[in-house]
Amino acid sequence: MEPENHCRGALSLPLPWEDHAHPPYVLKRQWRAAEFEARMDHLTPNDASPVEQPGSRKRRRATTKAPQARSLPTLIAPDVEAEALLRSTLDALSAHIAVLDEAGTIIAVNQAWRAFAHASGYADANHGVGMNYLAVCEAAAAVSKDASRTAGALRDIMAGDRSEFRMEYPCRSPQGPRWFQLRVTRPDQAQTRRIVIAHEDITEVKRTQEELTRLSGRLMHLQDEERRAIARELHDTTAQNLLAITLNATRLHEGLRDAGEPARRVLVETLELAEQSLQEVRTLSYLLHPPLLDDVGLTAALSWLSRGFSERSGIQVDISIENSGEPLPRPTATALYRVAQEALSNVHRHSGSKRARLALYRTKDMVQLDVVDGGTGLGSLVEAGREEARQIGVGISGMRLRLEQLGGRLDIRSGPSGTHVSAKVPIPLAGADQPL
Image 1 (cartoon, rainbow, N blue to C red):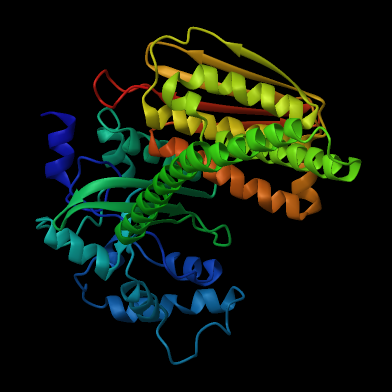
Image 2 (image 1 turned 180 degrees about the vertical axis):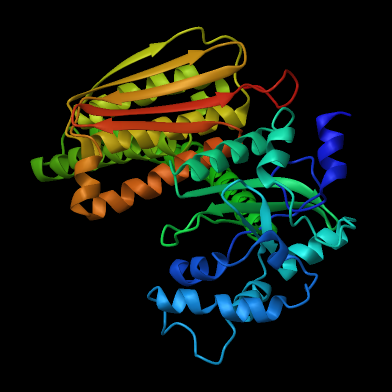
């Protein structure tokens, strides 16, 4: 029998792998580990079974006196049965919870676990109690990375090398595709080792995050389109009007050679102001959206950006572009250009470096942009809690979001010797988007 089929048929319970039809969850409430462990020390696989054994209630009442003598006499009222309180507490939680012994065997489950096992078609009256959770995960490890990770974490927790493990993963459930979070914990206060497995449905959280990501990406796209429109308007209209004013002022200056010195001085100042305004409008238009990005491509736009940045800031920028290849799709080129803009802006405002390096590399299926400086790094700003740290955080979030929209990622390494910003974006297949 194949491992996947074995796991699928053996236990329709909350288990951590994608191909299993089990929704998992995480504990919503934090109960005191000492109280919980004191109760679980007196549970055995037979006690944990939903089937009541003759005389078991009497035995449990006798054994609940032990934790009171062990330093927990005030946690429960004298007339409250400890195990009944524990069962009602576990059953009140929405998380699917199982308690394992030191060997990884399930010794108790809550109502949410039992309800899901029933909905998934698992017919055993014990709902998995008595089965070894670790063994089931290990059996599926060959076909599931999530099961393999969970098995490894369980072994570490059982050996005492770690006390907690968390993991988010997708899987199929009776309600369809869902997202779940697994949490494995082992309280340290009890003499007898117990491990708590909790699975919680986080599908709504994931859907909200995905919707927020889509909305943010849409807003960024609209922002880029608006920048492109404003830049075009400034270039085609405002800049042309200022150019006409400059030409008229020049002709007027040349035609009034016999005018007095005060009039000629006013004309000269007017001409200088018009030329300055024309240059500022052109610069603003290019910063909003350089025509080179649409007309020539990312390579020319980055070269223009680096030269202009050096002239305005006094920071020398060494640029290196290797294997530029075919033009990139417009979304990719725009995202990398904006990352370069933000990274160079951070160099000027925060690093204190007088030199930076901008490099663009391209392989068959990936393009990478690096911006490196020799400044003080980002750590000093974050530790000081200054307003600059908040501004950098917003800028980094914007860069990362732009890249994630394209399946890329942003890596930042910062230290006392400088900061290295690296943006990597996969190149889509030919015809997937309009090239620049």
